[in-house]
Image 1 (cartoon, rainbow, N blue to C red):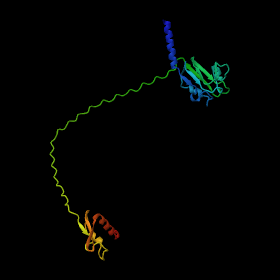
Image 2 (cartoon, rainbow, N blue to C red):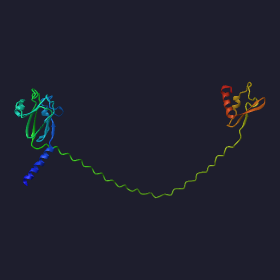
Image 3 (cartoon, rainbow, N blue to C red):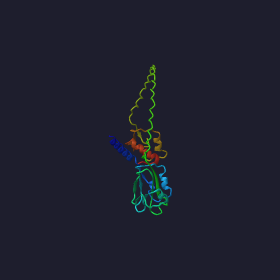
Image 4 (cartoon, rainbow, N blue to C red):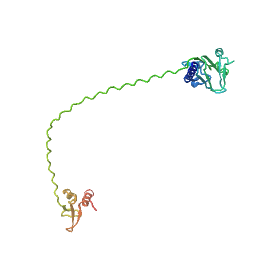
Length: 244
């Protein structure tokens, strides 16, 4: 029974460890290459916590670089001889299966001396992500004040409005029949003699719609013309001294 319990605990621990493992792209955007400075990869590890079960991914082009796991002595001297492991195909994923210091370098001549080398310190406990901060407490809404009832004013008696004065309707205009005017009076409708003007004759009269203008010809009333036409004709006479 105890043996079965230990197996179960070990299995759960392995599952938990696997779920907490982290994967790191070495150099991030730089990848695994000759760095711009010799301290580039040591700066990359700064601030990171590596643990057993984490994975390092070395991204490089096959044939251009390699990844060799070496001892600390060979790491310090950039000596690629007798590596612990060597990977020549990129990208390469290396599992950090044991705790302690792990050393990696590129075996291409000159690359390690230029700074293409990596040392990581692996802890026994799996790396854990920080627990997320609890969400801020939602402030409770302020109490809503009950509105104070407004007293209803007592109705006051208002004086009755004075009746509006009655207006008498305007008297309807008297209906009279149309007036008849003899154009030019005794002169009639002809070439005006000296000293006579149709403009002067028309200016002293008030014409209304429906009135009739008559003309004498040989001292007889020859025709009646509707006021609208002759008013137009008189207007032409006033301005241009002729009519058609």
